[in-house]
Image (cartoon, rainbow, N blue to C red; front, side, top):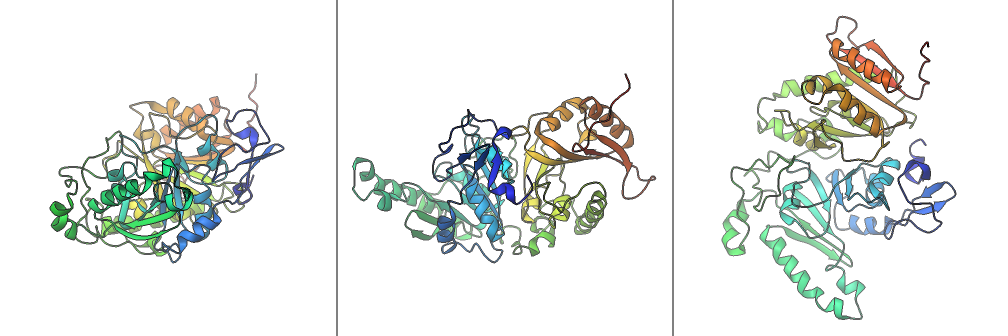
Length: 454
């Protein structure tokens, strides 16, 4: 189903769920209803988001990237699209509800994941707004951008609204809220607003005042010698991630200007070995490349929505794709020396760390287009072509497409593997012609696989 119609319903046969029942398949606030062969997603969070818009500046481009922990079927992320906000929605794997798979069926960014003893696979200072419960607060602090907003819309915040009868459960709620307020104060956050079932706090833009008040507040110790961007199989820190003394590497522009502005990590020199001119040239290159890709893929008609860039670099591919009705999961391989994922988030895009010798945190058949730039050369001496191709085949939707960009000898080997998977593919020159040291393998599985002679 083409975008945007898929926001509202999904074909039941595409998802891993128990036998179809006419009742709702997920509880509030995401009541998914079965109607015939379809799953229908009501717009049940509009009032909640509109209330939040009176507490957080959702309009105007200040908030662009959000993280919704325990997302359900991403109804919150769906509604935030109306404000130009791109939400990474995460939830645990659940074979009875398959919430993340339903979110991806809708064409909304989502991953399998949860706050826990390990860091989430995102760099520090990634999200302008974060919606979660009150657990793992130091990890939430690491992920929030300077001046970012934390939203809590569950007990103990909602005890006054939901427990007017003051039953036994409610009696402890005021104390729980006071304890929560003390924890947040130790992080040096300020409370923005509390209205009904929603409370909002804001992270400081730097830690200058926090350093002065740390002893008085009994704040957690600041991290020392800790790479706050490192988040692949890294345990959650029991210390407070220190912000730079300026506005954390420089303030990001408002959306959409931040997509093309020089990211603060590059402008300030925080990310070493990445000159501004290199970044600018990369953006121009990817604009040219995506224009050429349109020769083979129709990006404008909504038939492709969920796109993954398996080796995203500065996010140039995703930036060039932003004029089309798609979203891009920007993947930065965890084994690369140059960690560019923080730069990608500063552009107002989203992504994750990943090792392509492992399985990606998603369900089967969830992406419409896969883009692999240099991925196979990167892993040639580790897990190799067959493993990565099988993982791509797992997550690519039926009728999906892929673009593999690599050295000619590598592309020919990938072509052999694609034929064994019965992918419809062809090797073509790049936008620079036959003298380019790279080749493209264009995969379009909406076309029939050619018959081989017996």
